[in-house]
Length: 300
Image (cartoon, rainbow, N blue to C red; front, top):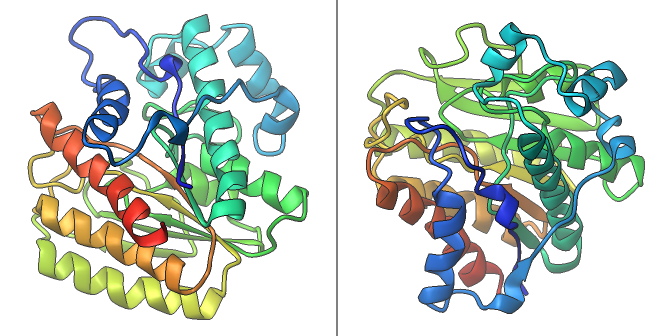
């Protein structure tokens, strides 16, 4: 069964006019339930992650700063979110959601968190709407518990997974792959094990060709026993921040390639949603829902 992590905390109240589309966290499961892609039985409500598990990746000083709501104004500005206890609770719930999904993926082949993909969070700081790094935390947990020994992170958000790349820079158990806009955020890129930089205006054909060549080479050369997929939909041509020209169908082909590749290679797959900033919320929700539909169709 496809297990999907979702919690009411995911839809956090932000000040009016904030550009981060929190509505999608409620609309995605609603749409999937409405169309009978999933049932209530598929939904899993995570708790909050412990500081002990957070410390597998994040520094004790940084965890304490967040717990005590003691970030400086410049540190808060870098995260992009107003700091509050509700926000910290939300972030810890999302972290547990991805960790739970990783464990479900070991059992069922694939699992998806409706939120997550917080790849701009470093070990000691947050950036770009990311306070903690869910993929890094779940990866380290699997390695620490000897549940996986060679992990591949496939980050296909339009923005480079700079925090993830930094965290795993010298970690031989985790290979990081980021395919992202060359001229997009962050201005200063970190070094992943493999970075593919895309020019503004990259279309479906160019995108899919590059991904096909590099993803399957990685599956063959890395031979992962677990894959994390950051499936941001800010690659869409409708995205306000993305700069690429990938259609919704192209985004779906991208997801199909990753999901089918993991299914055929019998590699457990944990998916986090990542970013999406299209003007119309329907463009964001539909592109994300395609990821869930494909996982359901291919694995089950």
